[in-house]
Length: 99
Image: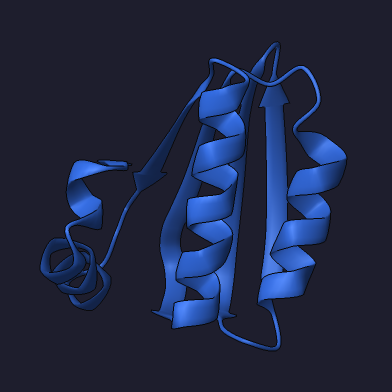
């Protein structure tokens, strides 16, 4: 997986490329732990992400809780149909801002 970040003031966009799975989820966690200080708007861009496993969902939920505790917001952008179906079936589409 490749992660690219773009910070604009207190807004952070992370672009994911490849698969977010058991092997790569710790990489995303480490990046977010490093970059989230002072961020109140996080966008995770899934345009080039092919797959998200349950380990990836756990990272997203933990990050959502962290952002909520910091009174920030988190959204998921460019979510593919398969991932969107997973979010809808689990009810997580109502938790995350998805576009």
